[in-house]
Length: 282
Image 1 (cartoon, helix red, strand yellow):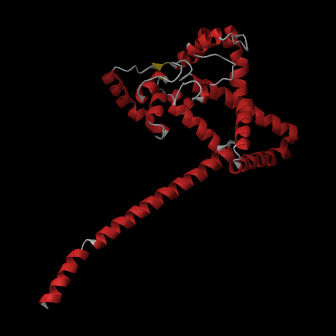
Image 2 (cartoon, helix red, strand yellow):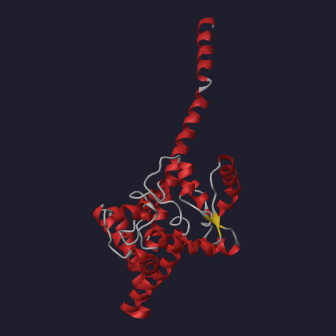
Image 3 (cartoon, rainbow, N blue to C red):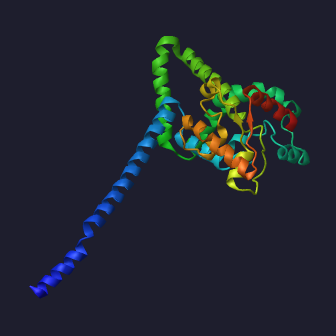
């Protein structure tokens, strides 16, 4: 028994940790599987909401939005400040256009024609053209199928009630109204801030330099959807919007500690500053 018993005892000691080791591996595997499944379902739901319910391309939106969050207000990287020569923004772009003698439009009047071009046409015209062209060029047939499903559902639902022309007009009316809200609400946090080539500074400072908040109130939280906490949204882009007010005091404390400006405005002031910024740059 001594010989075999000793070997058996050694084997028992060796094998004792095995069940724990195997269980940890199984848990890790299950965790990876759960994350993959959650990620897969998240992408499916995202494509359904953006593609089927909104008529947009999820991949196109993600690309634009990720670029914006990574490099806010940086020319040639943030698509939100790429206005296709319609307007000049910040201080650097007007100087460059002046030196190169570029004048596609009367920029000294851009704060006036902005009302006719920006809010009314961004979503109904530019977004639709840019999105469809991007999907076709990149051969993103899955997103294109989702977009087609949106238009199919929309026209099947409304043509019986208002005809083909009426359905088209109704669709564009929805996007016309949505575009006004989208432009004013998104640009009051960024277009009034520093817009330049890529700055040589840390990520935190670059986010604060390109972003400002709008004061909290019941109406602002409802009307803007908690994106009046735009600074917090940029620092914590995956955080649910209704939780952004909870981290705002911590962000203010961090800014005060490191001497970084935390800019917050009244709603009407933030909207007025859009026009003031365009007038100054023009």
